[in-house]
Length: 278
Ligand code: SAM
Image (spheres, rainbow, N blue to C red):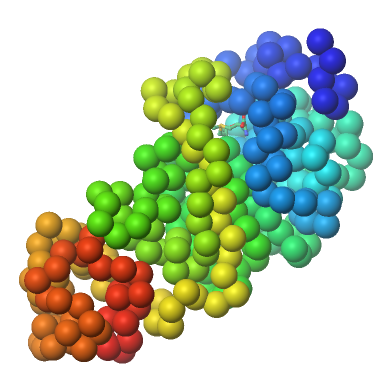
């Protein structure tokens, strides 16, 4: 069957290069190139952008990104077995794909990227949240990326876009929404992957804000939010007792009732409290 790029279908690639999925590396592959092209389109027009992809695996999403016109793709893959398959993609798109064999938690991609950069990835579940938190908390703002288009387990995606009053609302929502506009743009059933995971997945698109949604010191905000959600069932006057001797007054000054729980305080409220505690 003809593919979008004339390269062999992914099932054939996996068979030829003996890429039986490894659970330890979070390998759930996307084999439908129409689907990977659709995911690539969620990142917008990539023709003027470098794309950073984590975990290209056999190259399904990589091929989607290149077929959709990404200027260049830098792909970091830990599994050495995938390199020969990816070399064939490199050859089909001369000068547009660079593959680094390494651990995304250790490799510094910056020296290989030219702005503007967008990150697009079907992330390995075991390092996905850690990578997202790193991208959202760089030493300085703006970060190296303009947007992040990332596949997560649906439950993690829901925590990223969650609003106050929901169970999913917590540190991840505040961290993400303070710095970026975040929305779920696609959901995928287990059958979309080979092998199918137990859970549904979702693609989240995060577009970085030029400046944070509300003024606050990043370190204080992070500390307060961590304390508030570490004891999320407690009232804030109890969970935040260690933050200031007069915490009830500070909460009121920030417009927050001290008897509320963390999950009922908006992002704006937490930022106001961080300013009160500065
Ligand atoms: N992009 C491919 C796709 O959509 O079919 C594969 C996605 S699969 C969910 C995750 C990929 O990340 C695997 O290829 C796995 O080998 C790779 N991986 C796992 N841990 C990694 C790490 N720490 N650094 C880089 N790649 C990693």
